Image 1 (tube, rainbow over the protein chains, first blue to last red):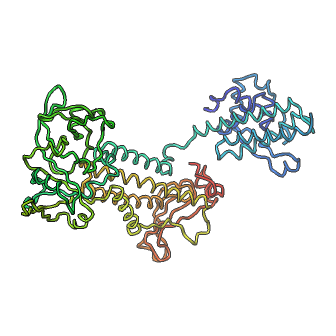
Image 2: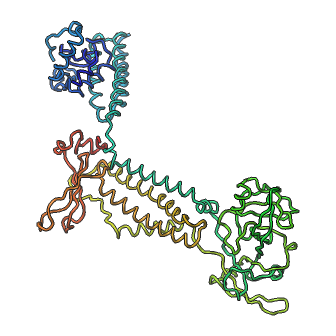
Image 3: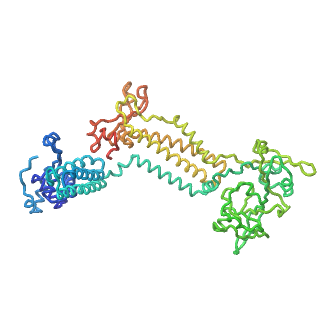
Amino acid sequence: MASEARLSHTAALILQAVDAGFVYGFSIMEMTGLPSGTVYPAMRRLERDELIRSQWERQSIADAAQRPARKYYKLTTLGKTTLDASRKRYPLLERLIPSEEPRSV
Amino acid sequence: MTLPWEPVLRAFHRGLLRGASLLVPGKQRAEWSQEWQSELWYVCRECTPAGGISWSGEREATAFCLGAYQDASYLRRHAWQERPPLAAWRGSPAQCILLLFAVLAASYGAALLLPGVRTERHLSGYSAYAGLVLIQDARDQSHGSPTISPQQFRAWTGSRQRFFDRFAFYRVTQETVSPSLAGQSSWGVARASSNLFALLDLPLRCTAPAGGVDGNLPRVVLSDAVWKSQFNGNPNVAGRVVNVGSRKAKIAGVAPEGSWRLPGKVDAWLLEPKSEMASDGMGYVVAHLTSSGKSEMWAPRVQITAYKPDDSEDDLLGVSLDEGMPPPWAVFLFAVLLAFLAVPATTSVSMGDYSVNSQKLPRSRKLCRWGFLSAKIALLLPIAYFASLDLAYSCMTVYSPSSMYIHWASSFSICLFGLRWALQDQQQRCPVCLRLVVHPARVGLASRTFLAWNGTELMCLGGHTLLHIPGLPTSWFSTQRWLYLDPSWGFLFPGSSAGTKEEMATGFSPH
């Protein structure tokens, strides 16, 4: 798979973070320790390769909580497959960011 | 340090993000700006205490904002890598303008290389031989052979004339000239009265600075060909002494190429005072008309009667040297005027705007459309000027009546066909993105329809418009029409924002 072959450690880390329930930009930055200038381009590449997809939160939900709407990221089927392959390649990935129940959004 | 700093820092961060968003390609700017602004709110909430500020938290927020510049840089690079292929460049307005610039550069470059055009530039502003007459014996109808003696010339200059105020004489002889120590060569030398060039009002090149030419020696003016062949085009040639026959003479300058249009093939002009002129042989006389002489000069050739001292008459012929040719730019302007008048008779000037159409273009788009047409015409005019000059001077080195006719005809043709092309090209361009419409499709059959529409339909690749050209113009559909597409057509044009308000208002298609 072309995307699997191209997946860098950073990209794998981000995929793992998204899978672990860190589903928006800042939380991924917090969890991975990567700066914003790295995280967002990487996420854009992952989105372009259809490994993740993004969706804006409904404005009504954000208005009710008196906060701006956020853009959430989610793994696609291809992303899940690629992440599984990456876990074999980077065994420490799951220990660095253990999977957990998705945070409430 | 408390509350007063908070709004300042927030504005600072928003400003940073705004700056970063300006670096993002236009199509993605709003989306990214929104995401950054949203994320900044969460960063501030996580890192700074409620109702106050902490420097570490603000550093975090600032780092986040600075990271946005890296994001923008990536997006800009990505957009460049993903730029449309060459196929999308075809038919774009930029391609059209660049092509016109290339043609203009080529025609201008060719004009610079042609010797005739260079001469024309040197002689710009010079009205060729205006008010001058070549006087010759009436028995010699062609003004090719010399018929006036130096005595006649002296007699005329010595007496008061009603129709002429100045005379110049020249006689062409073959002389041995030694332009250098190396050797001698035979030149056609015009032994002329010293006022010849002043009378002709010919601007000399490579002249010596004031006082540079010794007044004791006669002056010699070189032709352009001799200057180049014998003196290697040396610009400091003035002041050098050459032997012309048995006389020494100092070079006074160089006559511009193509400026000599009088009888006789001349390589150099030896300007001698009247007192030193030889009395033998026949020559040519050039005379300048007075105002009353000009009024009498009603035809290109007029009969002149000169009275000798013994009251006998000389029948002479005055041949006007004033070619009466307008300068090239005047010829070109006339051709342009005629071409503009002729265009509506040769092609439709309709742009296909249909008054019943419910969707109107915003003013900025209309201005762009008309600006593009104006730019094409503005580039066409200099192209026509230089290309027609190239044609006129391609086989002639001087601006003669023949070259004037070629210049006029080619200017008119290039302008007319150029304007036709500009209009027809404009009619085939989408009014929104100015790209050429493509994929013509025949709709209907003229033989099978009576009241239904039939013709050709073309589409804009950006998904903005369809162009309908009637196959058979009718009273209800006589010229082409643009159909503006609404967003419901978007599925046909993936990746484009077909018919969206933003696209209509702001810009070009994503292709």
